[in-house]
Length: 156
Image (tube, rainbow, N blue to C red; front, side, top):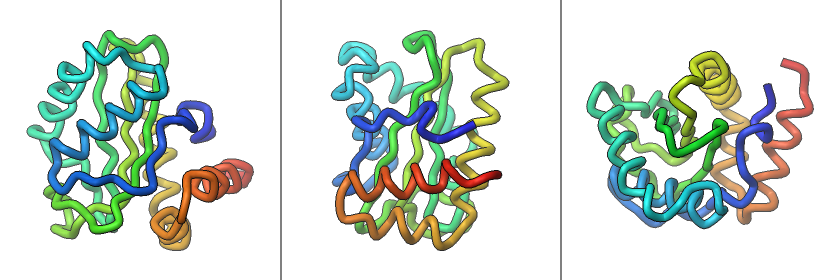
């Protein structure tokens, strides 16, 4: 499974502005709205689904990475947005450190297998410090997407 199979290139930001968990989730969902993947009227309910998931345990997995995710009936296929925060966000991360790289995953209700595969793929990729640093240092969306495309071409 490749990241670009579910990451929409129009739902990417190298400069998230929010400085709290709900703000970041709102901003990431807004990227999917602007990319034409989600309807604006569904935004609040999706942010609520994501916040409910966060209440069960933070998706801040450590090393400056967060993989917020949720399932809803507003999408037909699994979709992702990617955002990078220059300043870092307190996301109640497992290691207590700020989160800089956010991979948002939204999947249909009946999508357990691919959803878990995508989460595993993302977390495996982001365990690589060099790759994390490359994403954090990306100056623009094009260079960020190029880094992901290069990573996707490697055998895993």
